[in-house]
Image (tube, rainbow, N blue to C red; front, side, top):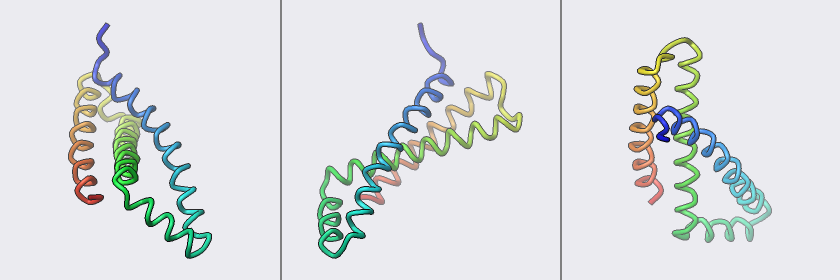
Length: 111
């Protein structure tokens, strides 16, 4: 069985929501630690400068970008625009294309 691109984008939209939830827990810990005092701030600063932390940050940012774009696509469809199968496919391709461009730009920004 082969799923259409619209199904893949919908499934990925849900998955990125889970990634965002977990990622926000990590970033809330970092915020709490950094606000605890100068030592906590220095600890978070050293952790966030590591390549692994930059990769995690990039991953969470990529999930945020995709989830936001897919959410905007769903809102536009709620207004009755692109509700056909052709419109859904076109919207899915647009979301994927914009996500690739914005995630690459985010990677340049982080590194």
